[in-house]
Length: 235
Image (cartoon, rainbow, N blue to C red):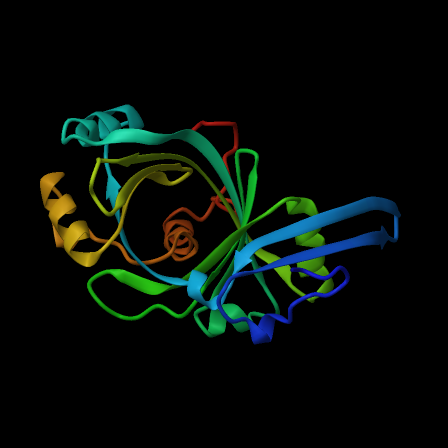
């Protein structure tokens, strides 16, 4: 039974999953912010998993790409939704150690994600821990109080597809620099699904969107510093 006023220490996490609750009034120099309650759900060592994925840049419209995937038996499980992502860092320490701390707004959801260093290989493979937060703005204030600042912002319209009984998912990402398909699942599933879609390993991209956008900016000097849409939904 959980006792009021006691919080588990993050460094002492052990299964089963603990629930963390924090409630605090935050004062900013320009005025008072109403108290927020942040609920971090089920964060435990056992909640981490190894993310395995590849991206492929595709020509054609998003509708063309979706029709190609659906013709192979996949159906939409998450409709087209705007994802607004913010990567946080503290004096570049996470980027330099190949780690990532992200706050994502996906529709009405806010999600914090940690990703560990990438393991070199055929696919992008790294530890991932993520959890929902009930108040994204308050979560951002907490990160700022801890010394983290927004290092990069990026947006995409994401559609997620899957097939019954299969262990992975396919996403169509409409970004300001083009359309990408992402395959996430066990390595064998990724390669088999790519082949089913007519994609070859030579097309695999394992770089993050932040890294891909850096390359895009070098080829397009006038592009903005962040990967965001100039107008809603316009590629």
